[in-house]
Image (cartoon, rainbow, N blue to C red):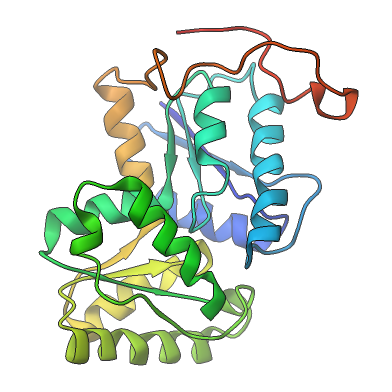
Amino acid sequence: MHIHIINPNTTKALSALDLAAAQAVAAPGTTITVSEPAQGVPSIECSFDEAIGAIGVLAEIARLKDQPIDAFVIACFGDTGLAAAREAAGVPVIGMTEAALMAAALVAQNFSIVTLPARTRVHAHRVVANLGLGLAGRCLPIRAVDLPVLHGHTEEATVIDTLTAEARRAIDLDGAEAIILGCAGIGHHAAPMQASLNVPVIDGVATAVGMAEMLVRCHLSTARGGSFARPLIKPIDAEFAHLMPKENPC
């Protein structure tokens, strides 16, 4: 089985963190690869960044269309370009945010998301609302630390201390039974935070890989009869023509 992770930003150090997180949980025999767009933004921290990152996700799916990939994982909290990626790809596409939310629902009655920077809370709210499944009523106030995404791997001591303190407030003040880490770049802090906090601390990249493996093993892929039908073939400007799927597999 081959699971490919797409990091929607251009920072290779974050791609390396995604790869390590995935390889730590992948089943024996599962190959994990990762890539990032050749062009884009170094981190995704606002809606403008996310729009650019979504084009990068589609570009990677188009570039890899002939590779023997069984599923894609999008490694950005907010699930950058997820719906479009599901239309474009011929295999399952798992967003790390959706995966983390579903995992939290299986291990706790309620949960809190701790993300960074503060303005990205809106993206977490959007995914919770869009996913439905009654999760909005189980998601406690979304908390954030106002640090840049790239600090997640360059200022690790500061970030883990700040994240742990905010997660502790979610547990003590909000009653959170589980914590979701709201950024792919901080997922490697999940294990030490879980040991410190004594509640489940969920890394979306790791859970997305597990869910991708499950879908492939169960021979389940994206439904093509409605919402995620393949894009309509139509004239498109040359600049974007390479993004359009050339075939229409079920």
